[in-house]
Length: 112
Image 1 (cartoon, helix red, strand yellow):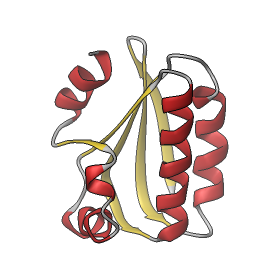
Image 2 (cartoon, helix red, strand yellow; image 1 turned 90 degrees about the vertical axis):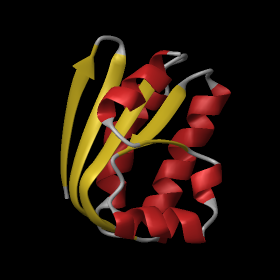
Image 3 (cartoon, rainbow, N blue to C red; image 1 turned 30 degrees about the vertical axis):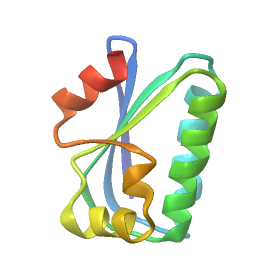
Image 4 (cartoon, one colour; image 1 turned 180 degrees about the horizontal axis):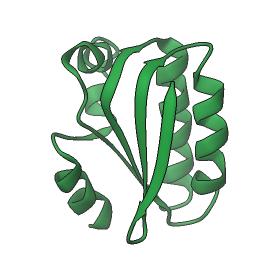
């Protein structure tokens, strides 16, 4: 898994590539942690290059979402590939997370 991090104004954008699973989710968690611990943080996670996610990957996102809600932050997931989106739908997490079709839409949602 490759993780690229950049800023878009006051929004932290994480761009992931590869598989998000038991072996790679701890790395993502450690990169998200410093950002999600700040109050009122805004995070976008771009998943356009993620072709596989398992339950530990979902758990990493759930943990980040919980931290966002506790600290008045925002977390938006964007550009989910169909195979990844179906995992969210099966777990009914597509109703829990804010999902955006494009990064531009995600930036608008994070800013609002």
